[in-house]
Image (cartoon, rainbow, N blue to C red; front, side, top):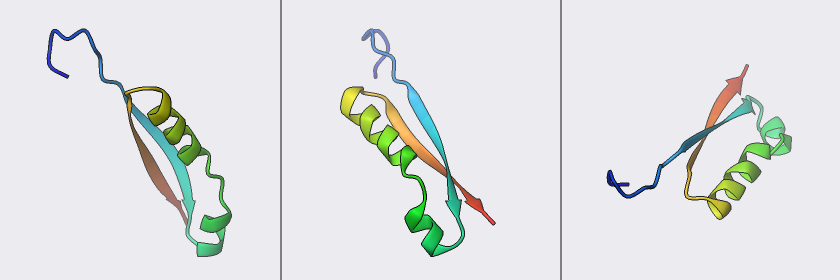
Length: 55
């Protein structure tokens, strides 16, 4: 947003774990996707999901 418009852009980083096995990735918790969707739907915040691989 340009300065002086009265709006503040807030970045939101959502951490997620990502298992190495495909089967576990399919079964893992989708909480990060749900939060990102709710934030996009209700606000103008910029959200990004950070995935951390579990070995």
